[in-house]
Length: 177
Image (tube, rainbow, N blue to C red; front, side):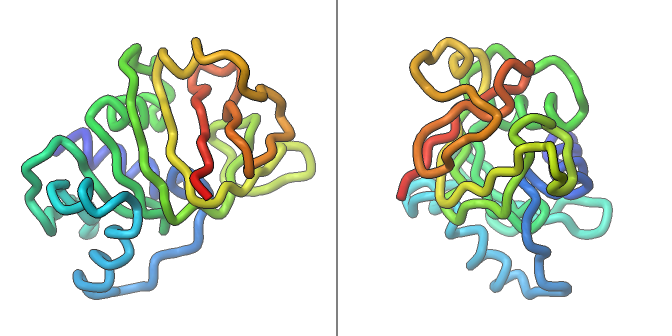
């Protein structure tokens, strides 16, 4: 639970995995669940643990039977496997990323992120902001060995690309629509 709290707090502080629209204030648990349940396919969501920040603590709205955890961070619904959660924690705390391969669903897309600065909080004239629609992410060491994907700062978010190329946190972005 500490890892979840650290991820959610850090992600919310930096705008989530991508800069995103804000979560409606004081939305009901039911509304929150509806938004989060759009993050991944139903077969992932039905067995996932769904968590929500409640002030400085994390509350579980659905206790899952799988290893998937779904949440909204910075207004972005997402579902992560345990390896992806470790990777996100490392990124958010500026720590060394895990060597494990992780997977993240973000089927509602994002509102953008810098493709050159993993901690940018907003678009600037030179940080190569990219908005990616519905996508999945492969993170960790395996993403660094997958060749053949564009590794440029000016990514085309309609095609697979490497985000944050040549940084310790580079990962593969795979649009799904």
